[in-house]
Image (tube, rainbow, N blue to C red; front, side, top):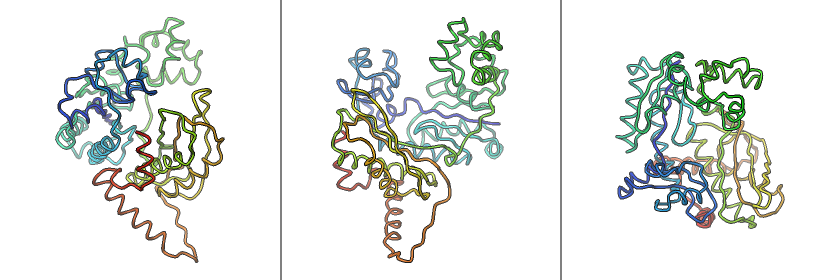
Length: 389
């Protein structure tokens, strides 16, 4: 296989700096504001020098870097930049797995020869990203997903690196922490450390021990350390689900307001589905209750395949009615059962209203693709978005 991994450099912060050069060279932290409940979404490399990192509680980030510039995310700008980035990737292969707005895998095994090889594609992606989007990215080329991912991390920011063979990978990581292995998180690393296994070299020296401790997962750890990774790049329709959540700064008891928030989320998911050319069969609503117990509940509904915001929203509202009416800290929707084929229903009593709605939806999508997903909003959506600020 020939796999490319692309990872944008400090994506949210980079977009803000691109649009306001006065922020360049300063410790910029994107996420919640100091004093609010929340975490760091991303930060500039200048902020990282103070120990600030993604997913860090905002209060801890402020303790480390009180002189930083704190900004809330500008979702519409990031989505528009992401759309342009993904469009560049799609030029070189139809086998793209978009991990997030700013990260993805490309399987160019069948197309690399058309563009002069996988390394040529990687350099062209870097060049076009700067030229067309005004941002830098780090790109890795490998023979597998893990090798490509590690390669992209090797020369950040604005880097390029290649790991062409399993032996090259083993030579690179042999004396690094076990955490470099895909699937070895903090808990697994702590269990390994208790028996003296802290580096990849230790994995090689204790293959049977690791297999005995972790079973199937242990074998996977050993295989990945050996450079064996048979995972396939998955196109969007093969993903299990996509979703969006929103965490409120104060707990919400107003369920009319929650319905408006669900409308905003449904529109975003509809936009994502239509952009990818796919449909969903199952809608799931997730709610996390107030800080007292932080209990999360989910409710799901399966029906005809759709990518329409009104269908997703209708199901989400029905599911919202089925959960207990208590103050809520987080609300979200995910869609699953993804397919490339819509469900077509014809009715003897069809008045043509749905056809009008579909044409209006198509027109809105064209505007969203051209100007960003927030170009058209209803009054309820504007009110909900204002309260979410």
